[in-house]
Length: 504
Image (cartoon, rainbow, N blue to C red):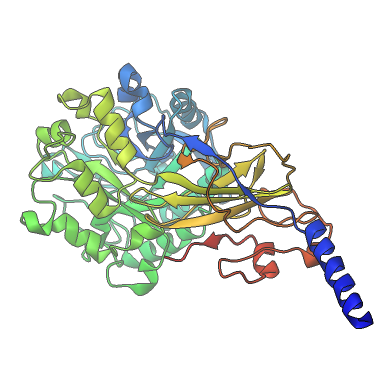
């Protein structure tokens, strides 16, 4: 009897200890609908079009602009490049003023284009390069010229035999990334060589090492670029699949780099293999059709025919393919459709609908809290991942794990700890990120009535999960508890800020 009494006493003590050590989990009701376009996705206009289309301001979130190295570079001395970013800053602030973010592409060659109001560039010369003026005074730097390549107008070509230019281009991107990689005004960067920085000089005889960089330099440049951008995704044209121009296709090392791709003639009449020539689709294949899982897929609607831009938003489709079907096939996050308003289909509702369909889209499918933490289960119901860091945020505290990379159809549970939640309190989660414009959040949908079974991922009282965006709590870190989906204690995993993936 004595032993039994002792056993009962011990059991009671354990029960009391368990009750005092673990905060009770409860599901929380959450009802939300997506009433505004998510950031960093959708149909894209150039800034002038974005300004003019007053009714479409909230139907887009991105604006695209070509940019000129010579417009921001003032000189070089002792291997150090000097800059004046004021014109670039003005452009970014202008785009931001409309609540949008920028896609930027620095280019060297632009057939037939005349540069004006940029004193460090070659002004008022049709087809002049965007190489800074100080190169022109160097007798070892010699540009070449083509009268009318591809019918696009006179074009000058940078001298890629110049070691000074080779150094400059790498250093320029290093300086640019150091200054702007974390800037929330910039959503995506596109890079490349040739006409419009699209990896070709069609209509001009290709001379590697003269009017186009050598493959060795391209390898060096791309590898270099991959080390520079940590927060802003960078992309190259699908035309980089052309083996005559580049070393990328078939090169496992280069294909393993973290670049995304953009297609500058998306949805043209013979875009896909099933439609005829299919050169675009073949290029997508050569650059890896699974690349979208980690790096963005984007581009520009074709200009082969006027109707391509004017009619791609036709709900009935263009050349037998709807925008939604094409976007889903290639997992498009964005596409430039600047001339769409010149057609009859770019209504406010249709542009919003088309933008909304692109890229990621989040739904909260479970929400559980206790006194000191929250577990929020999020599903990506879009067609592509989010390529920027963003965090489930409760009461101003972020989850340690990012929503970046959550694939379509997948869901994961994100833990927020280091907070205090009252017994009757139901704090509303938000999704925040440092690459969003000030005050912006990512909208989501939810339909939870609070009767759902609590989900796992909360932590016990007196502990927290250490990670980016979290409030650290050094109390009892060695004994805190976090549970994975199979019910196993996983303190070390939680301490590294892991999320809890839902296994399908």
